[in-house]
Image 1 (cartoon, rainbow, N blue to C red):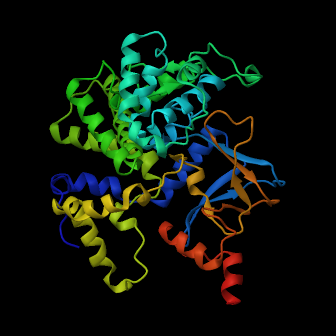
Image 2: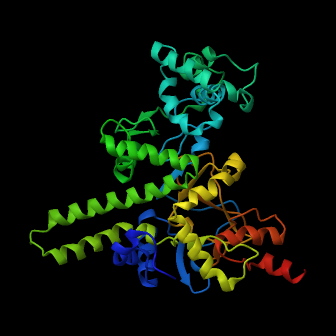
Amino acid sequence: MDASPCPLDTKYANQIAALLAPPSPQAIQEYYEGLIQKEKCHAVRIEINTEHGKGVFSNRKFEEEELIFKDQILVAAQHSSNKVDCFVCSSCFRFIGSVELQIGRKLYLQSLGLLVKKECCHQTFSNEKTASSSSESQNEDDLLFQENSDNAGQSSYGENSPSKEVLESLMNEKLSLPFSKQFSLPSIVPCPGGCEEEYYCSKVCADSNWESMHSLLCTGKSSCSLRQAAIVKFTEHANSTNDIFILAAKVISFTILRYRRLKQSLFENSKRPSSHNSTNDCNLSLLLEAWKPIAMGFKRRWWDSIALPEDMDSCVEALFREEMRDMAFSEEAEKLTRPFLDALGDDYSVCCQGTAFYPIQSCINHSCCPNAKAFKREEDIDGHTVIIAVNPISIGEEITISYIDEDLPYEERQALLADYGFKCSCRKCRKEQSSR
């Protein structure tokens, strides 16, 4: 493949190569053994093989519906389209506020037509809490009603829905719904930096998220105006194209802040001056250590990861991926794709509720006849992923989940799994393929 058209790839070729180099099997094994000890997931272990890469295996027997393990979020992002419907902690994604606030907020935003203006949902919330007491907020609300009047037919907010005043009473907790006190939610804790994008269920979650990633992405008054403008512009672009970019930004912020902490710790414990070359080597070593939790996951450039089109022969795969890479840095890409995207409208991309990276769960392989599932029980409110057995599991058996709807026909399952980069050969698929 020719040299990359991105100038950063040329300038930092050695550093990028080091970051993207796959860890050794020994390094992977040591990392996950330490992680399992830290998370106390002693019922499972991570094994590596040449066929499937990493896999999760059972260290003991499990009965059906029994908890296998819980895994903490490394980095996650709620999809912007989902923020209208669900007001949650930006760290653990637990519902916050009150039942009245959740219902009133959703209906209020629907009444403004913001279901089709998803990028505005957080900014609008800052006005919700003061809508009934501030004349300035009232004027802003009137403007929003005028702006969104053309979208009234697209909202599910009907003529017989509660009035604006009633919804404001719900959001300000002046109006209580029957039995809602039986379903109490954590109070709302604002962002430590003062932005109106992130809210939390506790000071612990707020401080943890600030230290691990949000301090670099905050648009509050404490951030410099240049960075604030850049982040706002980036977020608007992500929300209008694909908000997976926001998750990528969180990964980068997570790595930078972890690197800074490692460097500060080394500086405080070191009293010996270093040469320029040794300092550069040390910085790269610290960056690799900071990047390690991400490096242990599957990582390739996006143009190397997308599925090959069905009508394309594998012999031209290298050329196809090179063209995809070049298009990413082409000034003509926007001119070429924009007419098609405009014609497709909003139908070309349908978001789910969010995307997260869980370090142990990400090692679980797929099966169309899985023995486990990711499933939240009523008591699971801490943001962890929860893996539950769906069948009895014996000692030493590999734990599997389904990445797709396993009840789909064989051909449809294989087509969906192609986007994951593999063809399934589980027991169910082998049986169905042989009977075709």
